[in-house]
Length: 199
Image (tube, rainbow, N blue to C red; front, top):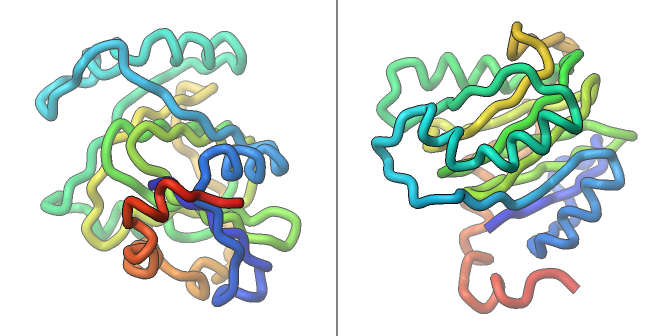
């Protein structure tokens, strides 16, 4: 289930939560963040290579390329047994910005984006089928959890790919982590709550 929690940036223990896709899309659009759902044009398996995965979403990728001039596309796959999982997690955890768009489409698994905009923190838990597009120069960080499990398509407008400018802020340390957020959300993952969404 996709979930958005909006906090004041000095109140990390208290936030307003959204679980309805339309509500999440609306709130993120208010800070110029695109949130979409994509579907593959064929069934994919865990053994599919990068070219096969990209081909399955080619129509959606081409639309974004035409809109934003993306020049490179790749697929990242992290699993709980990855030998560098702790190193990769730390790389993304500190607050930073990019000169480039940051676009992620979750083919499988989930991850938590934190967007720090206008004295608020928008914590967007993305799952399989979700696309999130963070505009250039938006202050943010990302938590994949202690045991990451996700596969994502990344799109870049430059050939250099992922290049971060770190802010030096420790704000990420005071907000709930991916693992804490998922643990807190477990009671919401019942069929009833998923049907109700947000009012």
